[in-house]
Image (cartoon, rainbow, N blue to C red; front, side):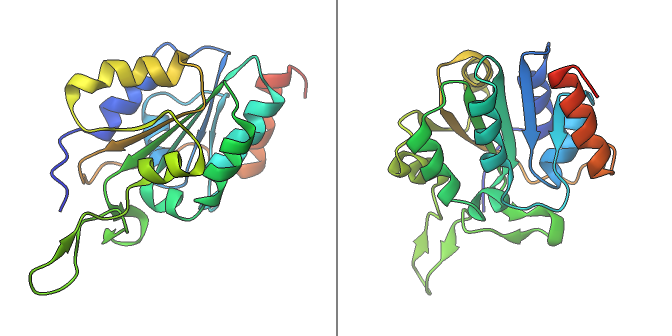
Length: 204
């Protein structure tokens, strides 16, 4: 079981503090969706509904289409495990304006907190494995700036890196398992798409 001490909501709030029109945020379904909304719903947030595995690919496309904007993808370990190949595609493109944050509580939070592959696992009566290391996978895909954040002392650098460091930046953040209040963004996908597009492009 994870011994993480970082709490996801305060962490996301710090990452998004002072966000302006130059920060485009894509959030994976479920908990990451509620996290960015709890930090403040804004038109340039794109919380995804029912699209597990999509945020990194969407963030990559957006970063390539909008090279003067900072694109921040915030998602979970279960979602990232669904789309590991997208990290290889990010590495082939190397967008300097893309940051990816995976909030890893080692659980599938939307279906009952079953352990994901990132959770330490028991391979037998005495053996235990460390679980899948998503930061190591990102590096193996060709993203050199891929590290893991575990301690509160690392949060300030995390916030600075995901907001300003030349990318692509990948940060795996080990967070606590928590039961948190749902803070729902609008649930109409067409509305979310339209308001994001209008806020970004400046026309209906």
